[in-house]
Image (cartoon, helix red, strand yellow):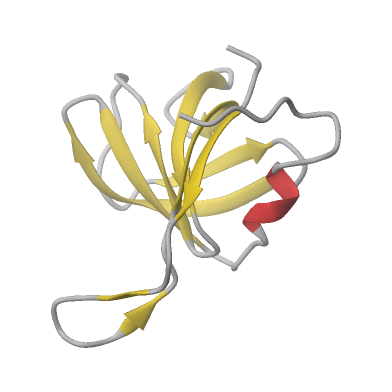
Length: 113
């Protein structure tokens, strides 16, 4: 899957302990993911993306806390750690904030989902 589907951008939200956090953009895009336990990068689908993290579909073997790298279109390779794993998905906390708008470059085909 090489296309990008982009949903309506989420607004800033307040979490359950009262801290304001920027919302995540709902999207579907493919990316390459590297884990130290894998010999080669694997293709994953990113389902949402924010400045500090992302959620990806991944059914391989990994553990919470594992270091990863993800090649996000328009941004490049970014590093982070797996924050959670559930039912074929993983949440990744990025080591450094990114600008998620860069993932939506001029060559991408945008579609409402």
